[in-house]
Length: 295
Image 1 (cartoon, helix red, strand yellow):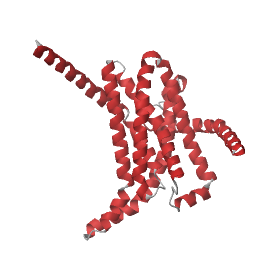
Image 2: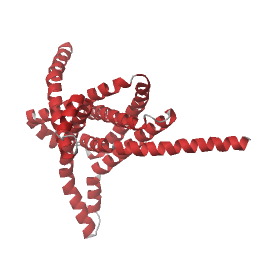
Image 3: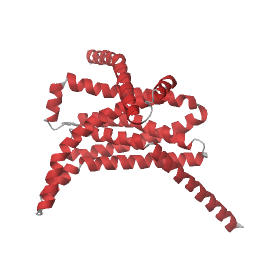
Image 4: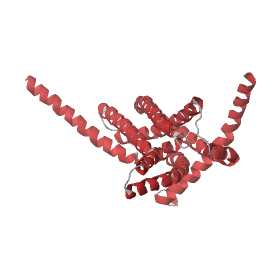
């Protein structure tokens, strides 16, 4: 009797694990596009950082990402049970913040071009405060992208049992974090690997090392551009998919698939980010001036 109960329990566990594996696989497919944006954005966060500080910063942001997901997963599960109507509005607020950050980056680049040149020719971050600001900004951005990943994954597992939901979301959260920040670490340390290859005697190995050293600065600048575009694509996509009238308008013109969908997401993302900047930047300036007066 005891053995029969044990085998029944093991069978139930195996069944749950099978469901978790299936749901996790489906959720991973659903969130793959966001993960690509996440990768570009986070690789972009460590541009301009001293070589020896790259991995510590990535590790700090990865830990922050896990904390983000540890906060978001319970909230998503609670909202799914008690207030599912709040999920989309919260997601849109996050999308607006991403678009705002994208436009703010462009404004900073074009309005403070001299500052950008100084930053590129220096060895930032020069002190702990600069590094801490970079980490905080990366974790804030990760929070928005993590929220979208969790919400999209929740949509896949919404009809599953509670335990399957919890385990699947946890697997997605941990797995995506390890994948994204592992790949980011490989990207940002590729130039160091190239320098290591230059110390070898073989001409072919040296040529590969030289190629890496030449390619990585261009690749990182490319990632910086891709990261900014990704902010608009993710943020604009959130609005396009959650505003019914806009979605129907795009669908009627066959702009809701393929390349045209990306163009539509980008345009909407820039528009939303511009409006957000018009509203938020004056408020931030007033707050900054008040703080300066008080100090």
